[in-house]
Amino acid sequence: MSGTQPTLAVEDLRTAFFTDKEIIRAVDGASFTIGPGETVGIVGESGSGKSVTARSIMGLVDSPGRILEGSSIEYRGEELVGKSEDAYRKIRGGDIAMVFQDPLTSLNPVYTVGNQIREAIRLHRGLEGAEARELAVELLEAVSIPDARRRITEYPHQFSGGMRQRAVIAMALACDPELLICDEPTTALDVTIQAQILELLQDLQDERDLSIMFITHDMGVIAEIADRVNVMYAGEIVESAPVGDLFDNPKHPYTQGLLESIPGRHPDEDRLRTIEGDVPTANEPARDCRFAPRCPEAFDACEAVHPVPVDVGQDHTDHAAACLLYPEGSTEEERVERHRQLGNAAERVIGGETDSNTDGEEPQTAADGSGGEHR
Ligand code: SF4
Image (tube, rainbow, N blue to C red; front, side):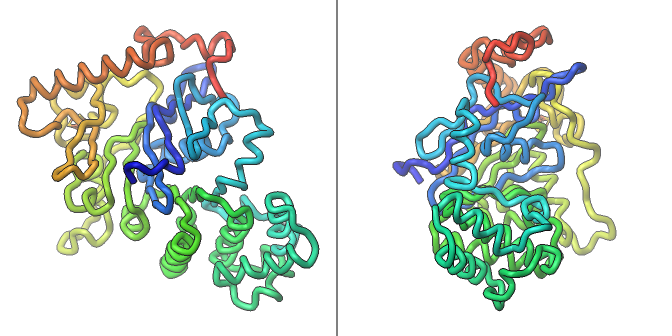
């Protein structure tokens, strides 16, 4: 991807929710890119910040949530953070479309499926009447819905779960997007249908050179679909690598735990391995490793120093992990000092925003409504 402008470039994304009691840092400094025709997986447990990342990109963060100053989301080189709702509406469903876990979130039960696809075509391509109808039939055929000309006249409740998700993907394609964000689109489906939807997405990607951001908690799904994977934990990306490297040579103890808990990984064992405990709510600036309470490798410094991503790849594979065990080949003292220094440098760059606020006060951006935040 080097030398090519990414379709999407997310840099130091911070999205926080400001409640009376606390500030929840749902996404806390996430950076990643998605190239043309590339599928990038975002994987992690519930509460890791995956969906808020997607909603931030789509401009769908509702109050009391805000994207913080210093965050950047560039779509083909154009900054999205700070755009007006009108401008965002044009991007949403046009250049960038989203497929949610529950297709009923996107489908209106009182209109036929054809009506809804035609409406998307009218809004985003300006076509009406017979032209729009023909394109709607073509799109349903493209997502492998048989007898599309008849099915187009049916209502969502007449479709099975898998068919509904196909219809939602057809609606997303009606806008001819460059980037498709899929938020757990197969989680509610049985395994066979899930495999069909993944195959469909791959075929559509090949035909249309789509960039796909695929969010899931399921490592098995990631193995099937992703080119590159970002592992999220408590708002941060803790490991990022090409999919083969991540599965063959996971570096972060959290990634190792996720892989160990894939069903069937240890066929000789009676019980499924799990990572004990839950993802913590990130309600303080990161001053330590948020995974430390669950980490089998934790040592004293993990509770005092915030690990930042460092290169862990072999043969320049673009593999990074945010863990004090790396970089390999140096002493514990050297590693910890390296993370401390990198963390301090990043904090200076962030400047007056949330994380420079070391004493737990409310950041200015939240308290004074002074415009230091974005929708
Ligand atoms: S920094 Fe420490 S606690 Fe965090 S993942 Fe690495 S070893 Fe575990």
